[in-house]
Length: 291
Image (cartoon, rainbow, N blue to C red; front, side):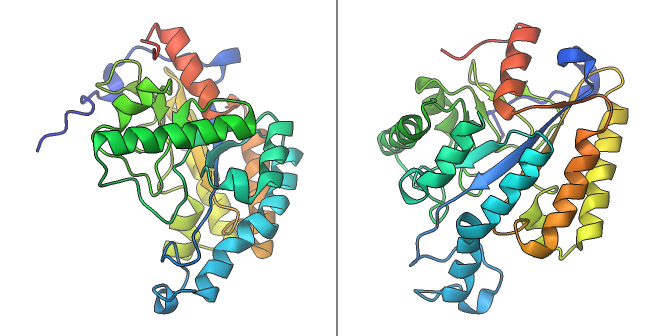
């Protein structure tokens, strides 16, 4: 079938985007804070045991994130004055309330990221999905005091009904479609795509491609330098996708610190959140706001 979820729009034919303060690049950290069920296979570092229940090797690797890795990353983000855009599984609200408290204290942005990351967002009827999304959104709102504005599905998954159902709940942007350097409106009025990073993503780089720490730093620098050059006439977005059980490992922390230091001190960069990017794009372009 042809894609009717959004229309083709070459970046060279759009009206210019202006970011606050004359910045050329809007930068945000997409921090994945996730819960995994102990009896289901999921993201793994060693495929040989991933179908076992329990699977101490892979589950323990993932569980390092909320227990240790997150707290190490927290210090690094604070050091560079970066507020995270949290891709939050709603199960985390019950399982790891200390993490929620830390983010609330720092005025982080909270995006709905499904219930947990052991189950992909698929194969639901409209009514089932509406009830599921309502539960996820309202759980996060109760825990954080803020209703999520954005969505990213577990594993970047959606159904064909997801954008419309999100609009019903008052959300107005998604991160699932990693196909642009600028926000754009979906073919659901009032719902937008905000750029996310599937390649500049610590799982893709460190786990799938086995890059080294210095290579990671160079990739972040190269990404920012190129996007900054591209943005001479119209603003761009740069996302850095991170997981505490990956980049939160001790031997990688210094490289995250180096990468963020480069970004935070680069001229023409707006250190922001995905919420603020979506809000500014809608208000400054006269785009349609979600109901």
